[in-house]
Image (cartoon, rainbow, N blue to C red; front, side, top):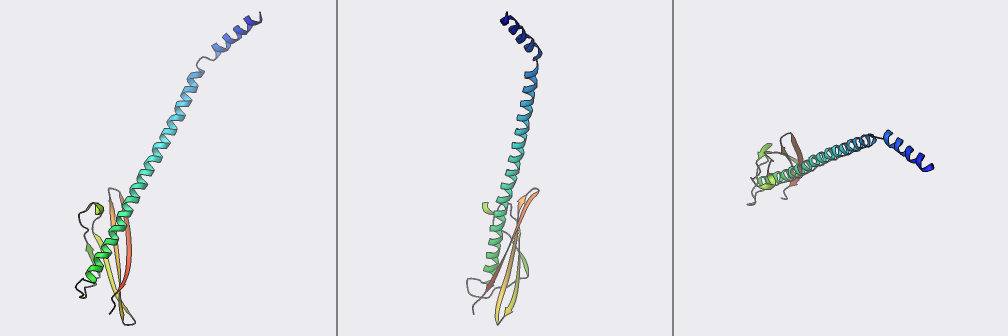
Length: 146
């Protein structure tokens, strides 16, 4: 007799629990969807940060190359005295490392201290494409021993 009442109790509980698995499944799917959306968002931010880091490195190396070009103009290899132009533009070569980096703005300022002429060279490069652009600037102080 005890078994009979126990089985009828199980039948009544089972009939009251119909559809509860559907609610649990919808809850689990919703949580999984939110986790997937969060991971996609994080992945997109990481991609943008990596792209910005690459553009930053390219801009820095392009600015360094621009400063080297200004130094080569100022101190030519033949030993003559070059010119310190107040501002000019250097166009990087069409190589892979300079891709998406355009005109580099160079500045040069000469000043004399204790009969020694020194030159402050500035180089500013901007790299990027679309709405993402990165700028880096370097300064070099040079003097020619006499």
